[in-house]
Length: 180
Image 1 (cartoon, rainbow, N blue to C red):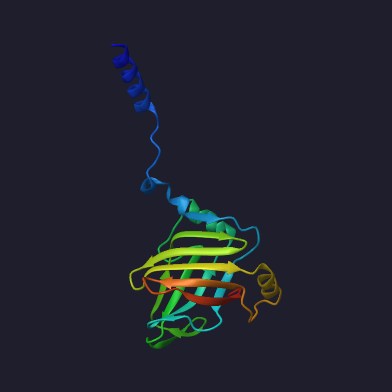
Image 2: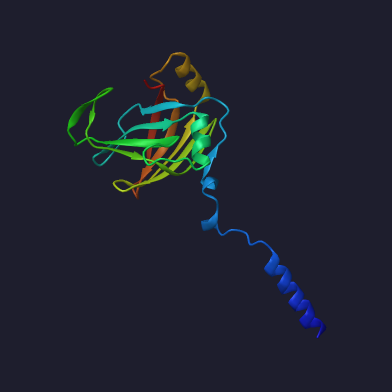
């Protein structure tokens, strides 16, 4: 009898405890981390072509801290994120755009997860055309500071591994450009 009472009490206590979330139930913001203290915003452009089939990496975009805050709080659109990668289909025709000429077919990959700090940019996203896209880049703070002082520079500020779908990772070196 005593054992039954103890067992019933333990079950009641366990039932009243708040269940910890399963990994799939974790809040969406857990996948998004921004801890940079320096201004990393801008476009990071490949120093040499990073091509995967017909797709070529055009740039990695990193936004302002307020854009990261908005994203983490759930303010998300379908075409913009505080970290995103854009690819051009180099087999598509060239067209005139507001900033010059560009390929008519582009693919912007938004994040499913990212981690941005003063020394690293990590990104994972999914695209219908490209599959899973990951980027893990080491940021050179000194080279970035020089590029920012010069309003752009031809030297590498990020060196990283770009993976598209199941293809082997490609090493890419990126320079910084502040944009228009």
